[in-house]
Length: 380
Image 1: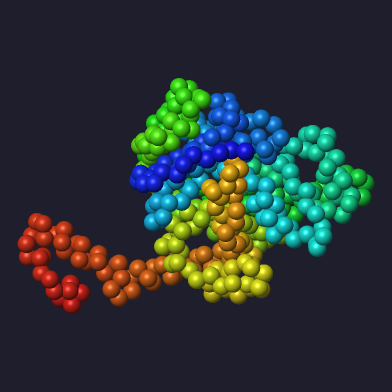
Image 2: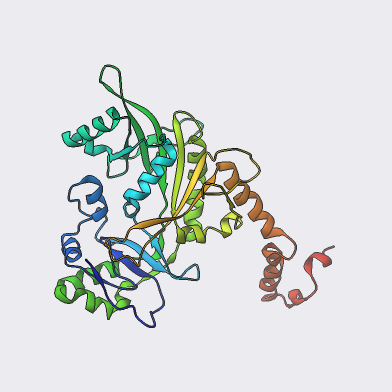
């Protein structure tokens, strides 16, 4: 079992690579012989586990092996995923599949990546699951069968799904057909700056100090933060919001069974200002609801807020779900496009400071604008 190095008493400030090839590097460094081998061989443990085959990390040399960044941008230190394959987690995918496809009580789900269907033993597994009354689901993702896309039309853009789950059905003539499908979007974060220096630092440290890698790295944590700046929160939200709105709406149309947005807790926390910090209402089943002005009985879309269990001695650290939130596209639009603008322009709100800022800037060139009287009260 992996050991963990001592946590520093006064950890330094900054943004640090917290996982490298799936093994923790911050605030503690995993001391694990298996992990050293994976890091030396540049293996992605998440793709390898999903496919049952050894798979290399697909990132470029400048960010090779970097899975997550530890940042205190939200006020407290959190892990921010920077690689979508870090979210390849059995328990997360199984939970999503159960929520979207809603098997009957006692009905089991067999969930496999689509490319694994080329293996006879996986086909046998799927066949046995369906014959015994279970539900068989295959999923497609970028490096696991490729993304599934909706083609562009003259009135809509092309749209690709991060992960597409599809039900596999056995026909009466023993042929196989596809049934319903579901959409899973996993949200990561971009960071300002560059990972190039840290990637080089880690590669060099492993080469020079293989037997003492964890100890040397723990003594030089600043190697993990060189030239890495803060998360690019606003741009990621703007880029993601429109796509999530579209996919939530697509999830409401047959034969789609729904859409799930899986979002790290750090990213969810950073989005609160962009969503008007919505109140979440509890449901009897333990889930929460984010509802705007539209009414519905069962949520047509879901947000999974998850985190990395950095306290675990298992490596890679497992993911765990913190919140499951039922919602829909109209509710997100209500908070992002109605609640947030209203809060920005309410009396004494941040929008009122625009005139103050304009006057202060003008006063740099024309002293007559240094008046302290409210500008709105003095307009002709």
